Amino acid sequence: MAEQIMEAVDDKLSKKTVIGWICVVALALIIMRISPTELFTPGIRTTLAITASIMCAFAFELVPNAVLALTLVVLYIITGVADAGTALSGFTNPTTWATPAAMLLVGCLGQTRVLKKTCYGCMLKAGGTYRGIVIGMTIASIILGAVIGGGEVCVPMIIIAFALCTALGVQPNSREAATLMMCAFICANAPISYFYNAVVAMAFAAAQTVDPEASVTYMQYLYHSWPMIIFGLIQVVIAFAILRPGKIKGDVDPKEYLKGEYDALGKMDKKDKKMVAILVILFIGLLTMSITGFNIAWVIFLAALLCFLPFVRIGNEESVNAIRISVFLFIGATMGIGAVFASNGVSAFIASIIGPMLAGAGKVASMAIIWFVGVIANFFLTPLAAQNALLPSVVEIGHNAGLNTLPIVYMFRQGVNQLLLPYEIAMPMFMFSYGMVSLKQFVKVMGVLMIANFIFLMAVMIPYWSFIGIF
Image (cartoon, rainbow, N blue to C red):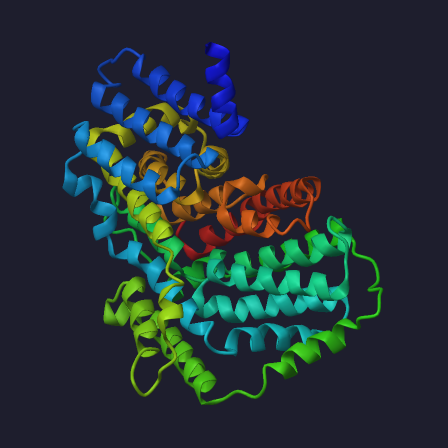
């Protein structure tokens, strides 16, 4: 009978799914079996059990993210570890709404030729070699990232890179395919480190549960982070040097292909020019947030709203469909983790565990440890979940070590952004899903970039932060 049951389970569930559910249940049971103490209260125990098991389910992709996000909130409420106001606080945080606003804006952008024109135009100007294409990707990513954020550029850049791979006839897992696909992701993701965006705003929202004064404007973030532009270029050089694509072969001349794609888009019409004007208005809005007092979410949303005005008519139903409700629910639920942790003492408990690691370590060594905590957290949580759950504790620990909130947030953000495996965040998974890059190639490149990131932060960014007076 038992064998029949197992066979029935095997028919319906993959081995990964069975292992995942075992891990989820086992993790919750193990934590709940720990005896409470004066510091490790029953409330903290239940909160950690719920959070850890739900995050484990996220990692194994056992249930749609939207369902898991809602389950996390509901479990917090029905177990009594948080009231509804605290558990749902992520959805009332204005920053949570920046992501759907950005999705809506990108959906509207997709109704014009602006994005593709920019990408193909930059690649064409940079030349028809692999090096030129990557240079063009980098320039386009910086231009677009300044307005719509690095993460939002990833999807279209990866799609364009795959189209190039197909047109040039490069083989999956070849050095050439890996160069185009990985450099597309690396280039598009880099602006997150120096242009203020929704993800950075979420990090500061998490930090504000400990330090209410923690905030930056668009220009302040760029002032604090502009040397990361140099590192963004270094990343591309490193990836290109590791993958070493050969000369372009085959019947298709890449320069002719790019020119054909660019010309096929046609000349900029009135709608495209209106979109450019809206992006300029958005850029001005981002620069003047310190004057208007608007949250980044409202600035982006107002820019998206302009696309739907009767005399503009860029936005449509397809643009609205670009908003992924599962992503919004996930962000809202995980944004509330920090508030739940702070309300029942989990943040203080985590701080009491990590705190001794920083005791007597010195400010520079403390920053290195904060980076490592972020890297390790990203193996078990998504970057958003890691910063929302752990950043308040890390900020509290950093304050005890005499550190300013700003470099703590920046260093932790850099840590959680380091990837070694594609499953750690959605965009590399999207890139990896095309089957053009091998796991060995991905790990090799991202492993070297992780080391380079740490060296650059310690050798360049910390001295720079000290020079401008925030460290």
